Image (cartoon, one colour):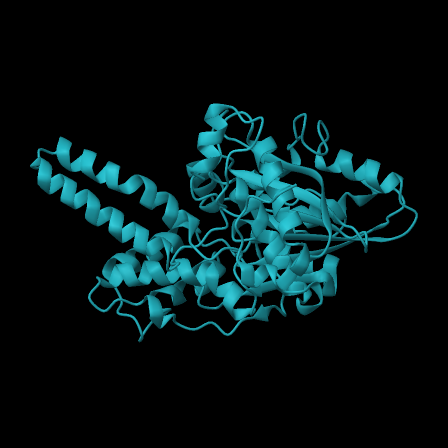
Length: 419
């Protein structure tokens, strides 16, 4: 297979021995994002091809991984972009299984509102037995149910099998212990601990001989549940529970009210505060309804986050710099702080916007009655801004530059070419 994904050559040049587990797992946790901009009825198949190509292209730094299941996807509406994505890969030498869970798809309103921000109520944790097990947010529960219900379609590894059905068949053939790592970034940083705990609490149902040794790596995630749940998951996993966070990352302050209260001055005094930012923080505090949320892992890895001065524009309004910092601290900062190259050199989110923004701006200005030459100039300025932004990158996302492949329909080829 000739890879069509253009990854950062600096990352590809790294050797497997040069990455520790936190670095390696961060890269693997970003791979489910590859299918984020795809839509239609063949999302799982196209995402499967992209992930397989990524695993092949990144064998140098990651080692020999093989896609065994998925990606499974959940589409809130048939044909829409996936709200959730997950895959399972196996290391060719060690036999380790890696379950990678995508974070928030920026193109999916369902992911934002039904999962990220649905924190005004909780649901009891129903798995496991004995003692207090706490509760998780309804958003976490919604995402977990999406993962539990995923069944890859035909022509995708693990076709017609749910995750637990796949794992049951896999472990029925194993005679020795197998390490299983469950990891995710952002929303995936909340769903990965919940999914891992679900697998651990139900392990006897799909792994009768208890061969799986499950561990968790949660990057940049909000708290998935309340204080009792945080204590329960730590008791169940012990030192196999790993939370890696950047204190300058807004998302990691959600949803504990005391942590949320720190956000108004999170980037002060380096950046000016803004009333709109403060109101957004008040909204987040109100959204949590005073529920006793608590982050998992009492001994997390705290990265040495700092303000990224290179993306601070003194002539820009304060809110623009605050949002730019938010995007950086939640994404690219993790790679820089963990000293591993970001999967791509150019922001694909910015690239996608730059492809569409000029035409969109011209249409809006023209329909508003703006004189045609002025609307054309306005469109060019917007396109220039987004094109510059895509090279920075202020809002990176590992969406590849992919060319059409043999066997693609004309529509699929066009979609992959603009992904």
